Length: 319
Image (tube, rainbow, N blue to C red; front, side, top):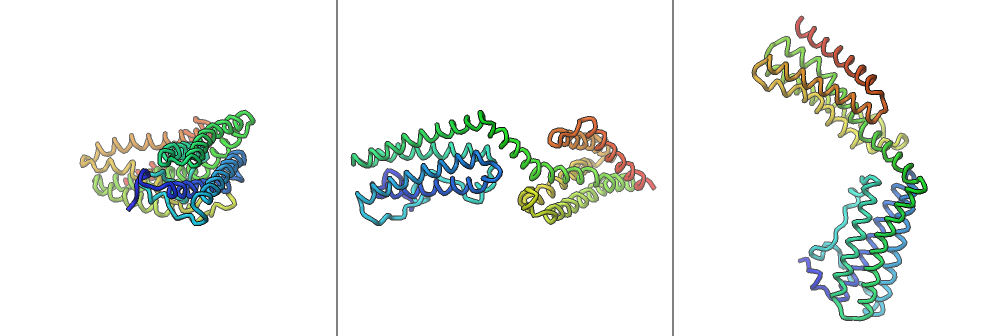
């Protein structure tokens, strides 16, 4: 069973501190390596934080060796109730640069609090002094992170990194999501409204719309995932792009399909018309916001495409 921090011996507290400093240092090094190519300024800051954590670990090991010898027992974070936790590596791999900066600040603040609590666990003067020094240095690390942040802003490095981050977001999230939303919203108009006008039955239109939306979502998801591995283009992991594209495709089609749950066919049609207008306006706004397309031009292009598909559906359904 996990032990409380107050129940740990001085030896166990030092062992836990060594393990914690080593893990935090490796997290900083991993993050620095992952973002080094696109965000060199932040990567350099993370490497500096890694070096600091490594220095803390050496000082802790030196004190431990004097107090307890060469063997350091394995005391892990999960072995102590309420001890500071860290995100799994597969989650930190997906953090954006702003999220990484906030994560670093959180890690340093949590480490400082740990050392402050650990001081009360021992009456040994040398141990208390070292833990107090480390707590003070963790506070300086927090300030150091803020100073680095200000230096990046004043030098222009932050602006360049923000541009790179925006580009990454557009490539990996906005583009596949927008492609899916456009396909789901526009391409499913024809089968949904063709079925509606052919049968004048809400239920039939709903079933056709659901089949078209889900089928299109699966198709677009696989097409996006298989189109590019993201290594050369920087478009990110193909699985995540496929998921984003597939979900947005399905959402785009379901939006104007759900109104046909209304049993009154004509009421359902009016609501569906309104939702189609909202969908097309949303697509135009996204293109304007993230693709730098003039709003009037984006609206015209989307509306023309949507109207053409809509007319095709009505003509086929009324034939």
